[in-house]
Length: 199
Image (cartoon, rainbow, N blue to C red):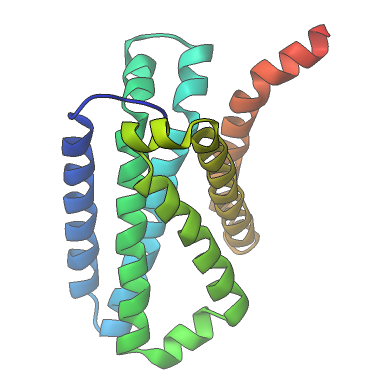
């Protein structure tokens, strides 16, 4: 989520938001009960959010490690991808609220107070990063803009990592998601590790 002074970021966000919202609604409507539908929408948007965040989180590191037309495109448009993640997670929040309204018992069985408080804390950072993902905010905040987005991105990263490790304990195929997240972290830290090794 770095400076990208290009209005073409917004079509990416609008298309992503519309596609994810439509997919979530369709996935929910084809289920037998409203509660199940809301839960399916929650799972779907959790995956789209994780995918979009991982791409935005890794974009600069991918371009630095493997420069090329595709990784250059990812690096140039990572703000739009990052805002698409925020839009996806907004749909995710709407699905959670829908589950609470249509099936409170199922909601209470899946979401405890600790997870609710932790999730709300993460949403605060997502909202702050989304609201400041523009050139005016970057100029206004100066170095604090980078600090906010760096801290916020790592909070979101470790939240996803923890969630996928927890799911991998029950379903082994989620270890693939964990491996991707760890690989992305390694890519981001690789230049720093090289400098530390050289020193």
